[in-house]
Each structure stands twice: as structure tokens, then as C-alpha cells.
Length: 473
Image (cartoon, rainbow, N blue to C red; front, side):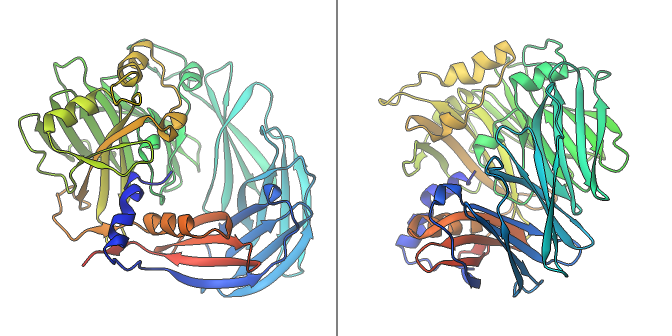
């Protein structure tokens, strides 16, 4: 989901700001059959040698493109597309530097493994019946060139990690029944019930996460060959489960929220680079903490009350309804009132400079006259019942209001008064909005910048285009 800042990116362009980092890296002629609703595009990066692989498919064929570490095209291969029941690609792996992609049906019941032999320019496929009927899919990812899929049991307090190695899938079941889980009503609930009512939100480590992800109460992160699951449903602490992908051992940590006598206080967190960023909000107070997950004494806190100015921010207080351009909230009291009646959240993004962009805000539903009709129900009512409904539709609706501000800190959580840094994500958003011929776009992080891959339907080319974060001078 794009950062909310993309809504006002065009303001800079209107004043003649030059877009930075747009470079065409490669453009390759590819002929796709008609029927773009069946097009599939996918990218994979080999972490060992930085080779990039692209897959572009129409209803009949799969076009496979291989790029070296300088993103020069080296090889192409065209093979028949799998059976039409396989509609999307779940993920990828590498073995002996050969890419393997995993097609899936929707809903996910079976997986088709397609292995590409780069040297001999051929492919082989094999079907896997990976998931049982009593589990539901949580997420998939690739870590250190190994493909993982995580499922959760519907009837037991288990997570199962399925991973691909040595030409086969291996499944490891992790029993979570020894851990205690509390919902927002401070009631004990089984893990399987907790994530049924509050689906796990997977955070992509290099992407800009929007507030629609930041407000979710249960998040999953993958860092340093570990899986972290955070739970912010209760008001006492952020509960964290850490799963080692080598041993599959699981450990629990609890990081207390900043205490308050205010019963309406709302909490959330975001994990970045082994530090947990915790937000606490009421109608009169706000605190933002950064703490090491490995050193409990390493914690720093910013706090502000209604009578203060929140001096640690780098932006005004913004409000945006639907897709309208954000407007400035001039009254701190009004900002606190809006934020405390919203589903609150926090996101953290790391610039190339190493600075961290932290977005603090919330989402709530309003009617067309601007009065709140559901915001309090979303932020308080769901907490009282221990549920945390999906709000993707809320964020995209014409009557959803987002309130937020941004702050920039260094890796030691010192507030930075620095030149404005603009996101590659904003440049990509603008390019896509202005480009009518772009279809099946993907974005992936590569060696310090972002690559937008897409098919140009007019030029009939598969294009790789580079984008970078930029500093306003």
C-alpha cells in the first residue's frame, strides 16, 4: 500500500520539482497474446549473485528473462503456461542458482512448482498438495533464497512453516499452546481464535507501508532469518513471538506500553531493524517510543500533551478524506480529538540515507458532511469486543478520513531537522498515474534502489525502470 504522502506528491511537481531516479534499465521486445486479464508478471532476485529473473505470462505462454547483476539481459526462454487453474505466483526459490517459481490456485489449495534450468534452457514442473483442509494460509516469503509458506490451524494453536529445500517441501509444526494470548478486552483466547478474528498483516521490510497496514494489530515481519509476530490487541504490552527459521524454536517477549491512567489510550507498534517502535495515544496525550528487542534497557521516548506542540514532528498535522488532497489541521486539540477517535497505527520506512521516516496516524469513517459516524466504533467498539476487522475497504472508500503526521529520526532515535527526503514510492506512483500504456507493474528492491517492472502494451516491451529516494534542495 502506498504511503499517504503520495496524495500530495503532485504539489512538488507543480512547482517544477524534477523527478529524480527515473532511468530505463532495460526494454525487451515481448509479444503477448490478447486477454490482459490473464497476464501475470513476477520478479525474483538471487541473493547470492544478484541476478534478476523476470516472468511474464499471457494465457498461453510464459516468457522467462534473466538479467545479470548490472541488469543487462542475458537469456530468455519461452515455455507453455501451466493449467489455467493456476492463476498467480505465490513465491520463488533458488537452488544451484536456478530459479523455481510456485504457481497457485485461488483460493490456495495446491501449488505447482516450475523449475528453470538456466544452463540447458528448459523447465520442469511438479504439483504439490501442500495444505490440509484444517488450516488456512497466512503468508509466503523468500528468505536467503528459500521459499516459505506459513499456515495456521483452524482447530489447534499451531502454525506450520512449509519450506522448499533439496527439491522438496518440508513442513515444521510450531505448537503455541504454551503461550498466553489476550485480546483487547483483556480476555484469554486461543491463538487460532485470535488470528481468525484479527488476520495477520505481513509487512514487507523494504517497502513503504501505508497506514492501512500500520493500524493492524497483529503483524508479521521477516528479518535476519527470523519471523516476528507482534500482537498489540491488549493495552498492557506488545507481545512478540520470535521464530528462528533455522531451528524453528519459538520464544516470547513482552514490551510494556507507556502506562497511563487514561482508559481510552490506544496502542500500536512497528518493528524495524531489530527495534520496536511503540505508539500510545489518548485524546490528550501521545507518546512514541523506540526500544531494542535485544536490550531491555535501550529505550528512548518522545511524548507530548495537548498543550504542547509535538516538537519532534517534521510535517504539519494532515487530514485527508478519500483520495482528496490532504489539508492541514491547525489545532493540536482537534488533531488529538480526531486521532483518538480513529484506528491508530504507526509505520517506519528507512531512507537510503539511513534516516527513518515514521508516520503516526489513524483511519476513521465519516459521512459526506464530515461528521464521525463510525470512527469511534472502529477504534473503541472493536477494542471492547476483542476484534479487529479488516479495514482495507475503509481506507479506499470516499468517506474514509486519514489523520497523520510524520517525523524523521536517525537510527539512535534522535529527531532530525533535515532536508526533505522524497520517496521513490511517490515517484513510482506518479509515473503509473501518468502512464496509460503500463500494465502488470511490479516493484522490487535492488541494491539500494527500487525497480519498477512492467509491460508497455503500446511498445510491446517488458521494461525495467529505476527509481530512488531523493532529497529536495
